[in-house]
Figure (cartoon, rainbow, N blue to C red):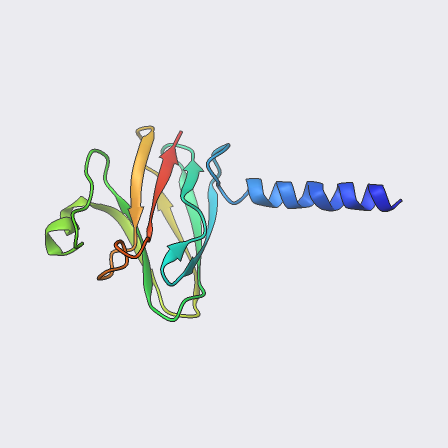
Length: 133
């Protein structure tokens, strides 16, 4: 019985992780925990052109952003006004806040840059990739 319960628990954990949109199979739901100054994952995979539900959990003491950069572009350091035209979509999250938002994934498969666009946050390590499949 103990082995069965452990197997059941492991199965539910693995299912939950798969639903978070890691770099494996694409998911239409992404959950991201932010701290000062990191995302909890370096990659997320989503299906091309689909509606994506993004849940951001800010466990840091600072405001953070999840900024998706357009295909074929990348930000320059420091992220500032000359990078704004490179933004595909973004959302801000206050310290201690959890926010859920929806966006449409890019239609073209590829790897897209994700950053926190606040001053010095990229330099602190807040960059990742959205893999569109």
